[in-house]
Image (cartoon, rainbow, N blue to C red; front, side, top):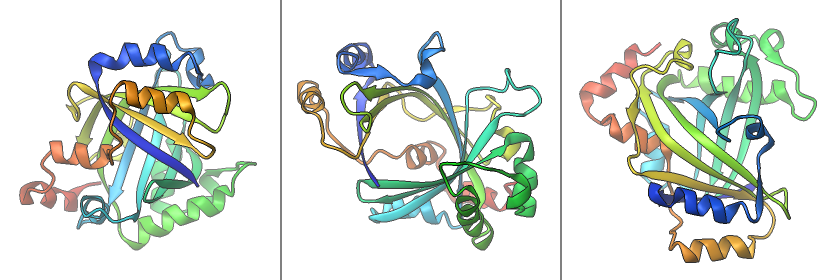
Length: 253
């Protein structure tokens, strides 16, 4: 398990904080080839018809999870839908996190969610028990009849410490969302609503010591660690708690 800490930061501080961070970190290898040094994260979050995972977060439950399917960037380089997407369970115990994660081709996603055929559709992974992780995802998916509640999209700049590869820092910007997506909408940019105006999320993940330079940065910019949830913030923007909106979950694909 790793520690995860989040900070909600005014957007006007982004360039200055990035400049300070780059003294002690290098960009994640996944952004080095991209001219803007960032990539797009796309996540479809699943929940029960009673919005169980949403209300667990609102209630401040310490041990909770999120069920989501995550993809990256756009399909322009993969017109045949050969890109991979990931089935994820993100588990959180206070500030400690862990994940179950498995890969499937995007073109096979809906067939997998219909059939549950792990052997046919889940891609092998030498570093993970891909079948076991997919089985855990599908257990919750089928047992609780989970529905796709919201698609959340944002741009991410990611960095790793030059001195400790276990320390990762990211800036999540331009967070936007669309409620009641189908899996086929994961790479669709239409009908998006801004979730967070004028701010970005600074996120830190680490399993070793918290570096002194990061503590200094937090102090210098007067940042306050807080339980920032893109999921609940985005659902609140769509007023998901209104009965007329919640009723639509029953018709979600």
